[in-house]
Image (cartoon, rainbow, N blue to C red; front, side):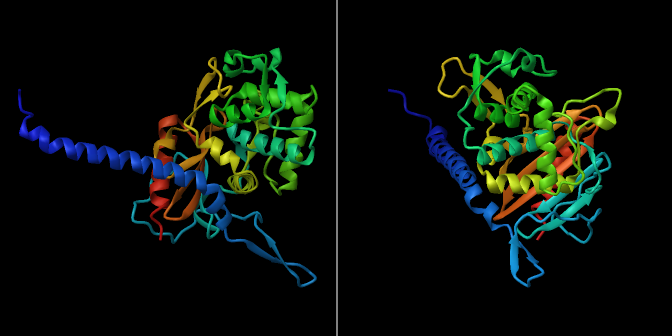
Length: 337
């Protein structure tokens, strides 16, 4: 009987131990992420507002006026080049602290970042109207399947789809057709009704630099780029803070690297997340976007050392520039004391 070579006898236990450490680390990280929405978001320092009656009221989501080109923040990581960023913001939520910004209060095209407001509008509408539910089934319309740059609903194996699955596909795959169907459903056949709901929601949140023309973020009129969906980085910060605090399930959706819809179906359609940085430790969302007018855009949420960070950039000339810039900004931000 042949003996096992000594080098293999030495390295095999080390390899097994390394694999055990790796997979246990993956498990613990996943467990920590699932607990995030119950802990880190709720640790955001509230902003105290003194009313005229001298009674102190707590407003967790007062809209911040972001000062551009924030200076004085030092990091162990070199600050990256942001010359290809049209507008951007890095914000540490626990302390309510701006780490960096440029054109943060300027209204710019935001492409599929639009879907963040679409989802919040739906969830708030369901909350206020108990006749609606995330489990409601919506008949897939031919008009929604014809939405530009879309293929999800055409591949979906059923004639009806739940509202929850529409929201998941919107945030994970950035499915434009799902958002069109959402607008048709909640607009009772008229998408313009839902667009008005979105703009009203933005106004109620104090998003003064936001206006929407559709529910998905595609160019509204290629000859009139000024009609595209617009928002500002400070508005988007306010929107995301409010969304993940009120509905932690959104963070769970955006952390999915892929999803199978319908759930528990042998004919399920597999969709992949458009966020390539989910593979980076600590990253747990949030949304990507692209149109010619908006450039390559991304909102990113990440947690590190007990802190929760919001990052957003828009206007990048290509996907690689966006991804490299965003990752470098994240590396810089998490090393700021």
